[in-house]
Amino acid sequence: MGIADDASRLGTLDVAGTAYAVTRARRGDVGALVALLADDELGRQRETADPEPYLRAFARIDRSPDHLLVAVRAPEGTVVGTLHLVMLPDLSRGATLRLQVEAVRVATSVRDLGLGTALLEWVTGYARSHGAGLVQLTTDRAREDARRFYERLGYVPSHDGMKLHLG
Image (tube, rainbow, N blue to C red; front, side):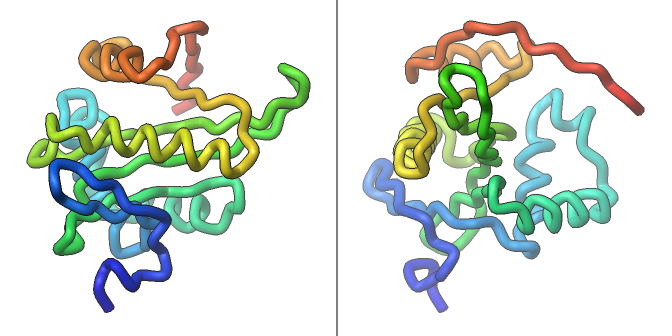
C-alpha cells in the first residue's frame, strides 16, 4: 500500500512541488519520531536510546481521543516531520476548546523549504474543523529561531510557561 492509499492519511502538504503526507503516527514510526526530537542541542540532552518509555508513551497517546501524534511523510514514506496535538476542553474564555501543539520538528534535510509553515497552517485548519477556538503552543526560550518562526505565523508570546520537574 502506498502513502496515498494509507488509511492514516490526514492531509497533504504541497511544498516546493513535493507532496508530503500528513498521517497519524504508527507504532513503527516511534524511532523516527524520537530521532527528530533528538536532532538539536536540547533534544540530544533530553532524549534517550531506550525505546521502551517512548513506546509506552505512544500507546497512551494513540489510545486517547483527545491526542493526535502526527508523522509527516515524504513521497517515499520517510518520516520528515512530527507534532503532537492535544484537544483541551476548558471552562475559561467562555469554555473555548483549545488545541495544544507540542513537539514540532522538521527534519534538517527538508528545513527551509516551507514545510514547517505548511504544517502549522494545516494545524490551524485542523483546529477549526474540530471546533477549537484557540491554538496554543510552547517553545523553549533557547530556541530563538523557533520563536521567530511562530511569531511570523501569527503566534503571540502572551504567557510565561512554568514547569515543575518531578523526577
